Image (cartoon, rainbow, N blue to C red; front, top):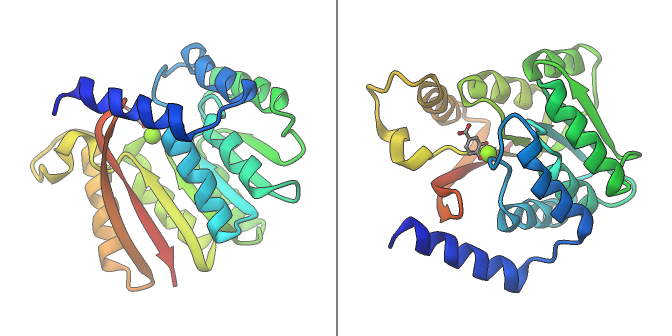
Length: 221
Ligand code: DHB
Ligand code: MG
């Protein structure tokens, strides 16, 4: 199978199964206006996150890495009007694009964007004694994943679900000698999960319009 075929199948399944309204479509297309075009989740992954929110009944949702707000919109909508979504973004330029998308989707009342380094924002939430989150989606700079996981667990309760995007990276995750900070961060993340008896986890590889990657799914006990 070629990358073209993965993309073709992804597009076919999204076309058949995933309903994107104008606000979602506009949010996805506006990723081109962010500092990192094209790295937002795919429509199929957005729908997956939304379904995960609905299946778990998550209301308090924490996202690390807003980008254009596409995944935040999927999760906020799925969680319903009494949801509280906190989404952390480092870059002002991305946050500006995201705020516009969140407003267009009429979700400003349930999505709170925190600008700044996500680890700092998470530590501030911990210090403030924030209520635990039901679901955490980690999808920012991969080198910081160990810090994000550590803080996410501290912001969790038994039953909290944590999803970490991009933990396969075209198979590079198995390269123990990699000097790429993103791979080192991902491998440390996997080691941390592995060593923590409070965490149940699995990871699935994915292929699609963004190539070969995958995500890790964690449940806090
Ligand atoms: C990259 C980041 C992502 O979150 C993603 O889904 C794909 C790629 C990246 O930084 O390359
Ligand atoms: Mg990602």
